[in-house]
Length: 120
Image (tube, rainbow, N blue to C red):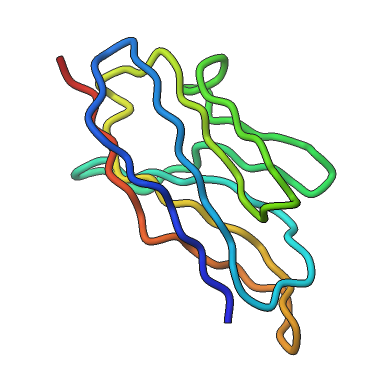
C-alpha cells in the first residue's frame, strides 16, 4: 500500500512564501510523475505543476516564475516552493504521484490535501 503524506499549509501574507512537501511511503519500486493540483472554493481542480521522471516540468501559467517543484528521490519526497504568493493562490493543494509498487501496476496516488490561505 502506498501513501502520500502532505505537510501542513497555512496562512501567508501576500508576497510571502511557503513550502509544501509530499512524502511517499510503502512498498515503492519507482516513482514516476509527481506534482500538485489545487482547488479553490467554488472552482474546479486545476493542475499547478507536473514533474516527470525525466525532469520535464509543466507549470500552470498562473504560477510560472513563482512556484518551483523539486524532488528528493532518496527521501521519496517532492516539494513545492511557493514564492510571491497572491490571494488567488488560496486553495487546497493536493499532491499526487504515479507510483509503481510491488505487486501492483503503476497507479496514481493522492495526498490528503492541505489548505493554503493567502491573505493580509
